[in-house]
Length: 170
Image 1 (cartoon, one colour):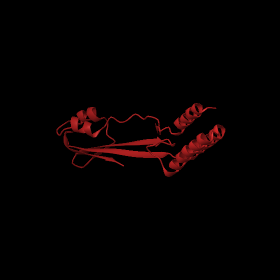
Image 2 (cartoon, one colour):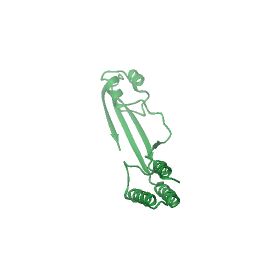
Image 3 (tube, rainbow, N blue to C red):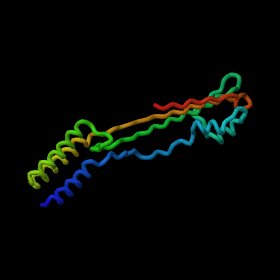
Image 4 (tube, rainbow, N blue to C red):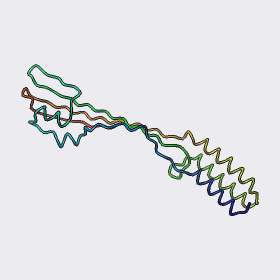
């Protein structure tokens, strides 16, 4: 095997080994259309409860006090899950990845100097397999939860007196 074939083969092996991480997300869940922006845009004091239902939909909780005033609460929670695949890449390399990369480069240089193409192919394949099995569990899992709570106070005539909302992410 001549040097050009060895270099081409080592380039192809390096391409497979040094592929970047791929972001994989779970199944897509339809998101609620209730947002803080929608509240700011469509809700104002003096609105009737029927108009609020048209704008925001049905509330989660409705309470009524002794004077006839009603409080509506909208409480929406969204959870996002994401996972990043493991593997070597130059953006997120750990110390183990640097050691393996150095070993591959040193093995390539030594094999090309001594002319031992068959030894090089065996060592490159072994290092490649070791790398794939060693970094296959190098995953990053992330979970993010967002909540939106809206509180609307209506008078006895079902007109909106006051409203507030809180948005949080953790």
